[in-house]
Image 1 (cartoon, rainbow, N blue to C red):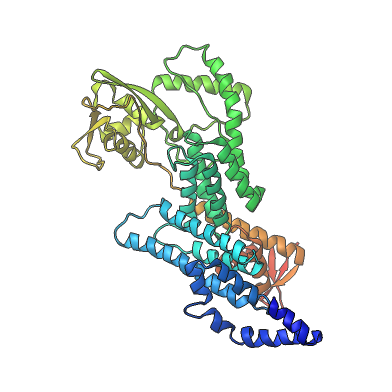
Image 2: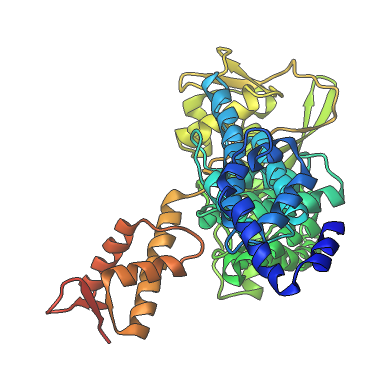
Length: 502
């Protein structure tokens, strides 16, 4: 301040701007990269050591220059990418050392969330939230989160982490921590190029939480869907909202049906959740042979439902059902929380029956691919309520099964999980949806423009598809299909130009 006063006293005020310009050029502009890349005081070193005040000073100095912040923002972007690559390399090293590759890697996702949180705060505080540095953060994380390490993409790992946060028995968090984690997940989600893949996996996991009553909080589920809707629009979350709506309507229907069930004498408590086909994922639906008592309850519900909704057709999804089975081993009784498939298998093996794998397959009318994971859950898991002969951790078609008379547990209520019969997502469905999206975008653009060159059309399609980044070859292939179907036609004078066919 004293130097500034001295200049004002002894020099002509009209020369101040020119003198400052010369000083900025000589002291900053000409040596900018030298200053930014200095080993002991450069921008990279300041970021490594968390020197906030020095970073702010550097930012204020270079903001005096026209386009003076561009090189600094580039250094910040490269630094963040290098930190992200370190996290990716750590995951790669764990996998190469023999760790099993799973779609559940909370430490990896937490590390990415912490990295983003840290440098988002740095950009807000040290760089005044300048748009150049916000873009640097965005570009860095677009590069980081779209790298694939191992069998699973970051989209799959992030969706599974969200499932851990929202599932009861997952991450041990209070309401505030759940909200913070969801905010950070959605921030990271915004950088994904495969948003549609995340949506497909997330929808499948949401369905499992809802149908198995494993959601920690309905409010948290609604909050997450609202955040995704804010980020991507109504179309992105319409099916998820439909799933929640189905369950809300189902509460009233179940109450009404329970009163109808009281008119019939049955030995079991029975309820049905009606789902709308278009909202929910596609599931395997084996034609299971049910016990007589279950069939009786199904007939009662079918008659009641048809009386209320005669135009709707019911399809039974036995693989999604669950049951509580009262089982007695020795002198102790247990409440076994199982799936419908497990409950029916336990019923077939009741009263000490011994049955071979093939006999079970015939009695239950189940394929080998379904019966194997079913019997594995009952005879090879933590709670071996069924004994397998011979004993091993692998199910073979030559095995025999009998109720485990020696089974004992300190818990009276036991949950016996079973491996899912369905994949975490349907790749074919994702590709099919992408194909439809590319074709729809092409037709929409050509209808408005009438005539376009191939490169222009390709660029326009890519700019309109927000949920995934299409391969140029896929776009070209879909254009060829649209030409075959007479939506588009090549120009007679230039084969690289397309005309819209009204």
